[in-house]
Every structure is written in C-alpha cells, then in structure tokens.
Length: 140
Length: 92
Image (cartoon, chains in turn blue, cyan):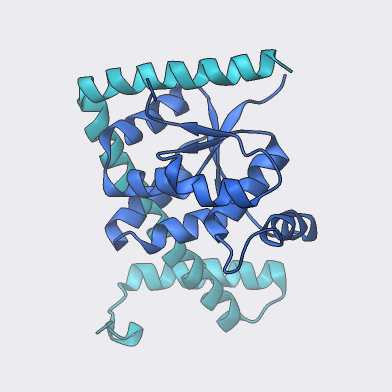
C-alpha cells in the first residue's frame, strides 16, 4: 500500500505553535484518520525561531505525541545531498525552511501543506521543478 | 539567571535511583561509574523536557477537542485534503 501524506511547511508549524485552533484541530484529525505528515527538521528550526518557549513546547510535543507525524532529519549523506541539490538552485541566502521542505517533499513524493501560497511565491519562481503546494484554507 | 545545578537539592531517593541505574549501565557498557551517572542524569533531563512538551501539546489538543466548531471545521478541511491525496494517487 502506498503511504500518502503531507510535508508541513514553516507557516503551518508556526500556526500550531501560536494556537490557531483550526490548524491544531486539523493535526488532531489527521492523526485520527492516519494521514501521515512529515516535519523537516530545518523547517522546524526556522519555525521555532519565531515562537516563544511555551509555543515551541506545543510544536515539539505534537511531533512527539502524534504517531502520524514524523520528523525528517538530515543525518545521512543522501539526505544532505538531496537538500544540497535544492539549496544549490536557490539565490543566496537560501530559504532553508523551504529548501528542506522541498527536499523531503521530492523524496517522499508528498505535497507540501502550507498556510499561504504567497510565502512560496519567491521560491517557486526560482526553482526549475514544479513544487506541489496545497493550502490548508479552501481557496474557494 | 539560571540556578546552578549544584545548588538544586536532589532527594536522597532519587540520588540512590540514579546511582543504581548508573551502576547497572556501567556494568553493562564498561564505562566508568561517574560517566554512567552523567549519562543517566542527562537522559533524565531529556525525559523531563519531553514529558513537559507532550503535556503542553496534550493540553492544547484537549482544548481544541472541546471546541466542537473548530473540530467540525477541521474535519471538513481534513476530508478535502485527504480527497486531494487520493485523487493525486489515482491520477498516477
């Protein structure tokens, strides 16, 4: 069976931390429905940088507590190479939160879940690949 | 300022527990007892930190579970997002 899921971007992680009820509820329901989600570690680090210590606790606790959420690390040469492939095509300074989300998305073949397509506009225009983005809020 | 670790009073029972676990770890791993004790203490602090994080999430999750409107809205969103994944898969 093919495993289906989403890669969470920094905007989603920030909203989980800041207490957006709808996003937190979505994470609860994803867990109940076993919709897999991946949290790229560098994306997480960037998101956490804009959160308070208490808000970070909520995000870390979610990753630890929910079985359907997995942290994607950069701990092997292959993982570093995949990330490097994306970073190399970005205009410096590279958007590392986006770069790691893209690297994980390409590897898992999962779309990136985001709060805002606008956040991705500069990245999408400079990369040669199609980046599959899905906005949480219904565009209609 | 952070309180120095040495000024924190560790209850005797905890001290004995750390010592017992460290002795066992030392025996099994061949590391010195002081090194084993340092490892046990470090893991203890990680475990506490992890527990606090989980509690923070569980409290936050309970709050949203109690909000039936938020859960209903999220269910609609989850259905839409799951349908997107299924459609994407079917299209391959």
